[in-house]
Image (tube, rainbow, N blue to C red; front, side, top):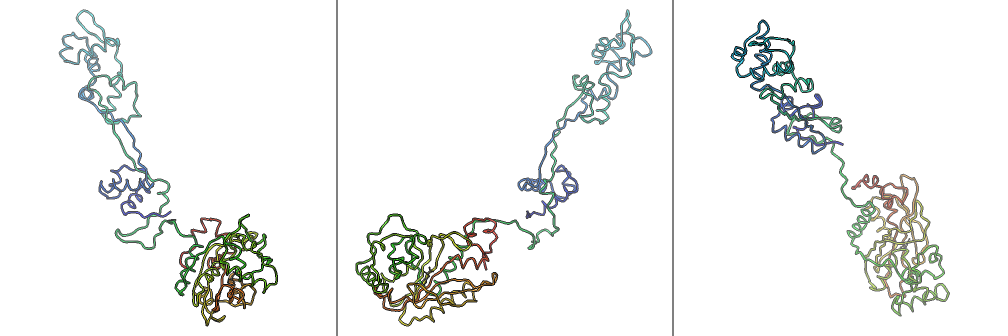
Amino acid sequence: MSQVLHEIEKKIITSLKNNEKQTPEKLEKSTNLSPDQIRRGIEWLKLKGLAVVTESQAISLSLGKNGLESFHKGLPERRLLDLLKNESKKLQDLQKELGNVFGPAMGLARKNNWVDASEEKIFLKNYPSELPGEKTLKQIGENKISKNEIDADDLSFILKRPDFIIENVIKTKEISLTDTAKSIEITAGLSGEINVESKVPDVFVARTHPLKDTIDEIREIFVTLGFTEIIGSMTQPSFWNFDALFTPQDHPARELQDTFYLDGISAKKIGTSEQIKKISESHKKGWRYNWDINEARKMVLRTHTTCVTIKHLAENKPDEARVFSLGRVFRNEKVSYKHLVEFNQIEGIVVGKNATLRDLMGIQREFYRRIGITKIKFWPTFFPYTEPSLQTMVYNDRLEKWVELFGMGIFRPEVTKPLGITKPVLAWGGGIERIAMLKYGLDDVREFYNNNLSWLRSTTKCQ
Ligand code: PHE
């Protein structure tokens, strides 16, 4: 991960890379920064997990007043022994020579059997070359001691004696780099200069789903082309999903294998009695069978958005209109790389007394152009509700083949007349996932619903 570092941080890191552990004071010297800059830099690096501060305690020993005196003149007991080295001496004389240290010196010498007394004189019995505490006193006096070198037993002899040894607690802070910091490459830069090419950390903020982006883009295209959006229910009586669209009641699309029915649910009111009567007649006349209202009452999950436009037409009977609808539709398909049981459709109609098939093809071409698809052609096809019926084929450069996109046509009089629509209606509709697959170069439609974070994060927003 790359980091944006302040000049102070860069200097501290560089110095610590050369010299692994340093006290703040050392860092001041090695970086030429002020104590305050060092203090701030260390805090920043700590917060970013780039530096650690270890605190340690050491005890340093130094000599007190009596210790110093003994360092220079010898321990009181040593001085006593030295006085007696060549001759025995009277107690009073020794007292005079040693002053106030005579008492402790004499006490120790007697106790250890170094001296003895006979009549009026003190004489030497034993002259140890090294007395307890003597070595430690010398080491401390010469400043040659560190706590771990010390002979603890020897120290204990003089530690108890008043004003001999002073213990000072010294706290030290040392700064070192974490592994992350060690791997950072510090790029030289004049302070104040911004390196516009430096790597920045990847930030994964919340973002909209690519499919949602495609839906929004399609919506925007139709709105800018002067269309108005209408919204319909995802559940519909078969009447609007099939019957109003002149789809006979024995049409295979209506079978359970293709359509999801709401189990046992029948719509009470499916349309006006006029609409029901006219549509029933249209089916009897056109398809020559006994139309059954109970079949039309069966509720389905809409299999296309065409039910929304036909209902809108029936309710508004416009002489002129440009309307579109977007939404989820449902089909009882086997899920595969090209089929889902739920997907999204875009649907549109243009109503106008002079509307022609050529206009319909022109609108399609313009829509595809705006979405970025230019290589298209129209093929004849069949829908129960349009005549003529066409299908757009678009060329997929990556797969090097033509793929079906939208279905379209002009609503048949068998559809429009019973509903009181008198002007020609151009209608089209198709799957949005298909378009999104082309846009994002996907071969498997399931990818949109896999929630694969790395794919979602890596898709480009602007295309
Ligand atoms: N409803 C058709 C489908 O789902 C598309 C279509 C809409 C065809 C309008 C003609 C007219 O594929």
